[in-house]
Image (cartoon, rainbow, N blue to C red):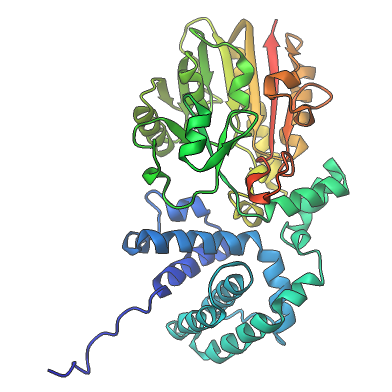
Length: 449
């Protein structure tokens, strides 16, 4: 029997992944929605459920590559387009970004990248009239794109100007540019293991960092990797794994993790033998923390409330308080490239006010002789060094307990002159740039007299 002329044509392979990538890009760039919101949880894109694992991984890598290289892509397309990117059809903009990113940085044949981007605009009512333009521009990109990028120090384009200027002011021009370069590479997968890091590095085809973190370039769903279901490890950037270690031996001690979710540091403290109270204001994030602890067979008390207002458990004070404070997260741009384009300089003031409230609450929760560890995944001094300087000036009963390089595997470059921790994306260099670097983190250790 001949096929019906009304039959629905089969979906072109790879088109669904690119369509969802375009939707998520639009969510970040035009609706100011975070990647995490669109990829996981209640607000996740409904189409993700229909994608095969391979297509879902492709879509995530595509979106991350575009956001990581957005400044470079904007420069390139402005050179290839006489009248600029069409502003009346967001799907045309997305199609150009998706096509160019594949041509320049991904293992996708040029003809496939062009064809699928053209199909992407053809399937959108407002963008369809730009199909010819997208086709012509992406063909030019395949021929001329790399030389146009080589004309400029493209990594500097991929950090918003206000942020790059701040980093130059805080760290100097050379270091700021090294940071921008490091952020341009796709990051590794960092894992904190319960025990025997060398064995897990072998099983996960990775290597063990001096700090004990296992680092691998394996991609795909982490839930399918060996040891995940058995609760032998959890995902945690190597820099994020350092602050909890600043408490030293926590066996039998009472520690409150004041902004605990999703629970990596809570897990570290519980694994080390502490009696942990995890506090977080988000019910959804706290549910994720409970799930993580259950998988890891670790225990902690949990409280869903605003950490800045929590009165404590009425136990006369804790041996330790960890404040992993909400911040601009500019140190995590390599892993969360949407942060660069969603954050504004004006956000810093509101966040530093919250950090101050959390620190004041943390001091009140400590017993005399107790240890306060404050950390943020921000590269902005206001959220790190300046926050602690202000606290020490206001609280005569606190003193800094300087971190020694020996406590952090001898990595003296991440210990400041004051004895605090400051990791940068360009620290821990490696012959393969994807296996180097830290998230940008700040941490200080204080003791209550």
